[in-house]
Image (cartoon, rainbow, N blue to C red; front, top):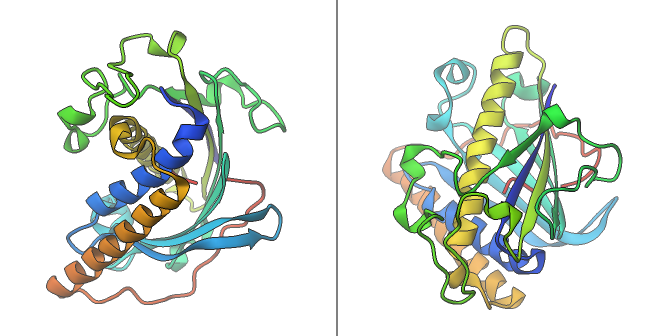
Length: 279
C-alpha cells in the first residue's frame, strides 16, 4: 500500500472555499467531458451517512478509457468507468471509488480530506496519528508543473488578479506571508494487490491524483471572481445546471461515436474505514 498526505494551500478561507469547491468541480467536470468520456452524475442530494450523520452525497460515473496507460487497457473493457461515491460534511469529506471490472477487486483507494485556515503546518490534522514526514507532499499551485494540455494563461496564478477580492498575483514564497490562506489536507491510501503490477499501478494512481489536485485547486483560485459572493443556494443551482449539461454531453458523445452505455456490472465497493472527496 502506498500512502501520501497531500497539502495544497490556496489564498482563500475555508468558508469561501465551501462555495468555490462546488463551483470548480461542476465547471471542471463539464469542461473535461467529451469524446464519449467524462463525468456522469447519477445522484446528488442530501442524505445521512450511517457513521457521520447528515451530509451531501454524490454518485458519479467517470468514463476514462482513453486516459488509461496501455498496460492497464489490456485488463479492462473498451468502455471503462469508475463509480465514485462522495460524502460532503464540509470541512470534512469522504470519497470512495469502486470499479466495474473483476481485476480491480484487489484495488482500493481511501482518501480523507480536511480543510483548515492555515498554511499546511498542522502535522496531525486527522487527529489519530501524525503522517510520517517522508509521506507528506506539499503541492504548490503557483510553481508545481501541470500537464501541458491543462495549462491556460488565464489560470496562471503568477499572472492572476482578482477584482472582487483584490488578491493576486501570487509570488514565490507566497505561502509564508499570504493572508488569507487555507490548506486542503488529503490523505490518500492506494493499494493494488496484483503481483507484478502493484508498485507500477499505485505510483500511476498517485501521479494522476497529484495532477488532478494541482489543476483543480489552481482553477478554484483562478475562477474566484466567477463564484465569490454566491450563496450556497445559488451555487447548488449552478451545480445542478452544469450537471445536466455534462450528463447530456457524455450521453450525446457516446451516441455520436457509436459507443454504447457501459453495462451496470457488479462492482466491489471499497470499505470506508474513516472519512473524506478528490478535489
